[in-house]
Figure 1 (cartoon, one colour):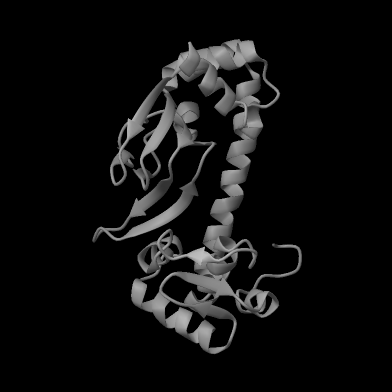
Figure 2 (cartoon, rainbow, N blue to C red):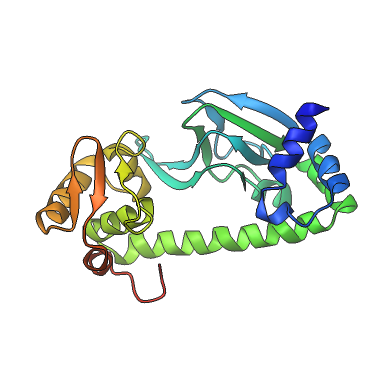
Amino acid sequence: MEKTEALIDKLRTVRHFQKLTTKDLFTIVTSGSVHRHAAGMAIYDEATPGAGMFVLIQGKVHLCKYGPQGQATIMSVIEPVIMFNEITVLDGGPNPATAVAVKDCLVWQILPESFQALLQQIPQVGLSLLRVLATRNRQLISHYEDLSFRSVIARTAKLILDLSGYGRHPILRRDCGIEEMARRIASVPEAISRSLNIIKGRGLIQVDRREIRVLEVEKLTDLAQIGPGMQ
């Protein structure tokens, strides 16, 4: 019971669940199950039968797409407490990406059949998912825009701004190394290293073995080709 109550408290922090009653949250929690996944393990693979919807309680997850030679692009980074793989409980289709546990993870999972039954009891859950899907759609459009219209150096500049909260805090390289940065912008480590050296040479960032720190936010924003109101 204590574990159920703790999970209810965690789910209550999800923006889309905040207006639900404790009774509704109890129904949601008991409709799914809790699982642990070790760092480096796949939680589910893309193109396999839908694993259902997840809520990440602890840890960190990368949603990845893999190319023909096994090269990975990170489509999204999931951190607590947020839903992911929600599309499979709505359309019953296969997983659209592979979910990899970057850190040891604790997740709550609900299978498609259980979710459909849950919708009958708590229609508000479906409305909440529509907002999640709208957010995901905007993220995908932004990702497509980056790949279509921004150079590698512009994408690197934009990623630095995103990771640093527009210069509010340093990027710890142990948390996001060159390879991860490359996967997040569909590039290769060599191109990221070149871009970092160019940006550093212009005096926009400070780079050492431990961290990357933004020195000139406005100039880096210009380099990232980010217009007014897009921050």
